[in-house]
Image (cartoon, rainbow over all chains, first blue to last red; front, top):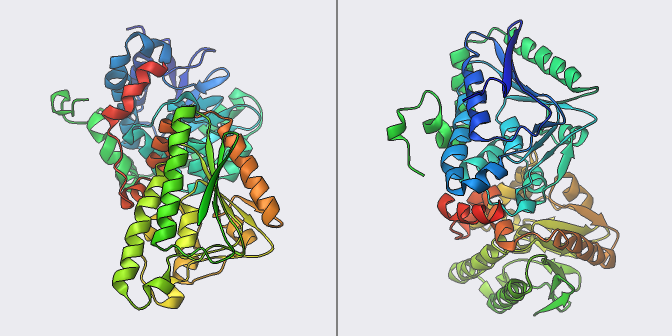
Length: 240
Length: 242
């Protein structure tokens, strides 16, 4: 599978930076999810992780065009890979930062919130849970991402039940995003890397970071842990 | 006791009369019937409906009919048990819901308002008030579940349930319990209907809307007896949406 051109990895100081490449929508299909998971696995030894993207989009969600050719695989492959990526991020032995360089919709928004911290481009791009508009229900583990990470009832309702498009200033005001950064994509990436470097400088024991994180979001962890890279063999995994 | 009218794609449910609209068995039954009618009418009309609940007079509702219950705990439990499925019907309703808090909403009346997706409240009069602590009544567990789900601002749950704080509209808005504040009852109803029209205009699939509502407040929905769909059932409609 030619996944190398789907995302790049680089080290900046102690920070492992993953960038989704190209000007497209970075739709989360099995190929891209697999590439991201490999890139996450390659973070071993780093002090913090940043996930960013080139272009106008961080990620516009699942690849529906791909799924329409194989709908029954949607749940099994894309869903399983996405669930596995969330598990990998939750179990990662270092702090994680999402650099929301562009639009993050649906599963793309879920991926953002699976990180410990979120830095977002101030003047462009929004978070958008498009499912209510698209007529798609939320499977349990996916809703759990938002139940854990968006505790405020009004925020949860406005994001998921009203499908609000939230730009950075509003997302920061609501506490959904940590920081808004002026400028272009590179400025956002630099700010996210700087934030990640600060977190790495705390010198936390990575295993402890992972254990505390899993304990902080226990409902989510319990629903994704069997899909992670370190989970028991695939044969033991629940069938979908 | 209550009426149901349709204004375009907005259903307006009105608690009629100038009394406290106590939630006794007859009013609960009347409301349940009206909610069921709205649901049935929307099902045949297709996507893009919304419900607004308003009340005449100085009260939205002062809660379970403790006048009827008297000193009988059995009767009080009977009322709580009767209200629970109405709460479930509202939480499972396949359309957005708006409560126009046109007057005092206390105890079960406050709960009724909370069972809606949005709340618009008049500023000039009326309070949201969980009186149970002051009266010395325990809370049905599904009441607590609803408040735990929807009242998440710091200290808000404590203030509302454990201190019996009487909330005027402005304070309720700051706590995230009310979404919009209007000067008086007429503006409150107008704003609630306008909000409902905007929500209805999104033309959301009702079944999906209700499913997402249940996804975001699963414990509260479970506490009123709603059984959430399995993932297998949820994904059945995915293929047709792609």
